[in-house]
Image 1 (cartoon, each protein chain N blue to C red):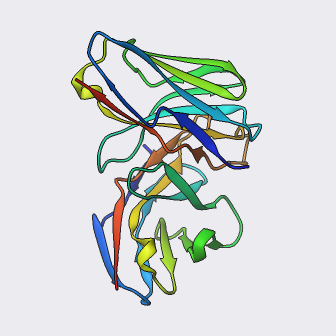
Image 2: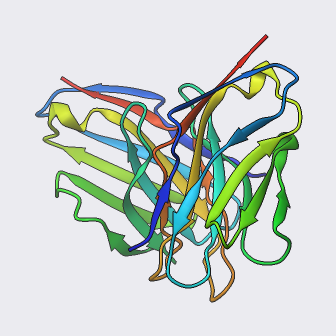
Length: 114
Length: 116
């Protein structure tokens, strides 16, 4: 069965410090992995995806993610956090069977403190 | 334009009412989705349309009735809802996935539904 785990409910970071939001996955076959961000009372915004190729994927707003096949992880990173990065972050994997169905992780709330 | 719009932003309805949620995109996407999201939880897929045809119904109760009148519009008709149906309803669209290609979904801002 395919699944995504985000082991941290909340991550607290000081502004200017690097941040990491963790994601691990379990899939059969090649993984198709995504990160989305959700601000309060808003829809999800796409940040980045890994389909194939370089293990380091760069995305929107200065975010990047590192795909690690041996550890089945796809952690989201940013070198210097901003207060405006505070939001709910979802990792997702595409389900098998077509139609681009996504399985979302439970979400991690990122709080960046001034 | 990477925008998906949804109306209304907020909706309060009684259990005997009939209402509709609307979603529109002009990105030429041929796949459209409805999700339900409870507070502090991930979105749950409800329906998938591809080429204006219903492709997936994730065992959603019949009081939710989707409709895709054309390639840009997606509706969700609501009837005889229950209080536990109160949630944020998100629409999304994407290019159609093909083989090893996988496309991100673009989400609308959602409709906050309250059933009284």
